[in-house]
Length: 217
Image (cartoon, rainbow, N blue to C red; front, side, top):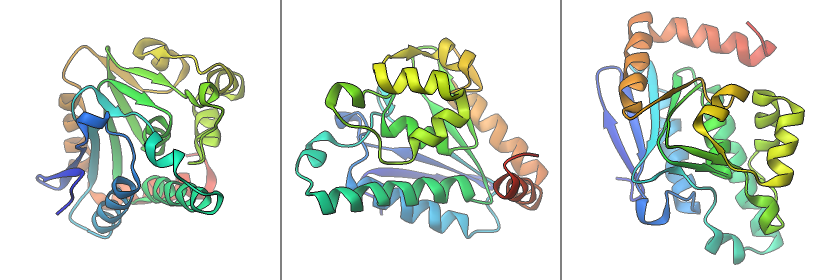
């Protein structure tokens, strides 16, 4: 049983919910480990075609846990960074379709996590940013590459160096998310997951293998 996650297995797809609402679903070391265990376990299953990732309360995920970051030594900071990089690489290489259902804050490492997913949907109240510049840090989870791939180098550079917060509609315009809905982001995520189930895991797996190997369809 996960202390920081809720796992809801449905008909051939799974909903993983980060359940740390009181901490804005920050990505603590324990949370990263639980996400890694869950995604790795689900990734090995032939009966699951899609995974929906979401958060509780007012956040999808609000980055790394700052309290933990402040206590890291240089060596443990490297290990923490590598833990996040390994998890996000695992997510983007899964044979299943991974859908981020974003409602609320999607910041820092939380934005990196969303970018590791195949498709991203958000509610209109959602907010996106990489606030590290205000703290004198930069993401260590691979977000510099993923954000630039999603929105282009110029837009990524602006977001990283200014720590600018953008709303969901602007996030859609520049390519961070694929669609914005008013309220029920889970409804569209579930619809897409069910469509993926109808297509079958093998079809999705072959498509994603092509993308991962060549970077294009």
